[in-house]
Length: 376
Image (cartoon, one colour):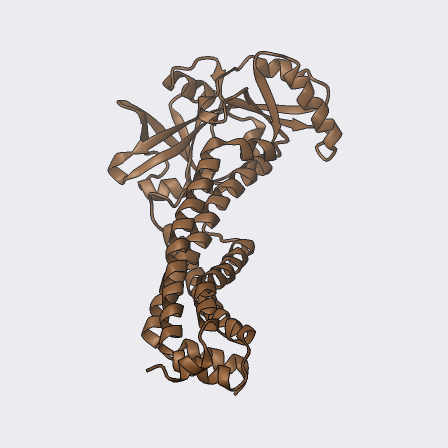
């Protein structure tokens, strides 16, 4: 019998025990693929958000890693525009709302200057875009509009007792914006009681393909003083504390699930070695070396881990797709799982299998052939 065939037959010798072990591994690997994939999706969505507008630099208050806590004087935008190499400066104000009756929390609200270049990256599906003379008017992303059951002409309360009319439903290439609300900047400043303030500026550079030109503009912005910091979009996204926290929690939760999986597979392999003591003694008597016994146990462990990785990856994909249909998170999760996340899951599965099978493999090599043959 071929060595690999022998290993596969050993893994299905106790189908119920093997199935339970595979489920434990699938939960751990599925957690890695799903949670880390979702966390990576958040980061990717932020990158896409700035890329869609053609932003090269983001200016916020120094030390304000939480964008919503950044407060910058709107008048500084004129000074930034005067810096050589700057093509356009886009001020923006951001906040979050909750619609408790619909079970939706953390809905993004963005304040933009009507009829400015920032609107070029979104497409109006129905109604119209914002105009400079609009007051209590909003645009709603099509995902949020569906979840709130809103159409053009309906109203949304940004604050208690102050309805804003939905003048348009839009679609963006970014999942966050599809689940967001856009308000005239002046109106959002009034509602938030932040007159003349923005959370930051997005800068488009003339020669955006030249890193030196971008760096020159960045230094020019920071030379204005006022506690400003200018970062490339990549550096800005990576510095957002909320994203860092989400990624850390994803890995922490996954680690707990993986530890459970390691102990599960270790228990299975120890029981397998114990039940096959006489068999191992026969193999040793037939000339199998300790190294071959070790490989047998380790490969059996790895095979179960890889099957668990496959089941977990499929489950993670289906779970993430299902979450995109849930109104409370449909405007946050984009439903994509990158290939490298799945490959990482399989790599982790191999490591889990090796760790889980190491102790049983060492135990198997310590069995003396003569004693093993007499074991009952």
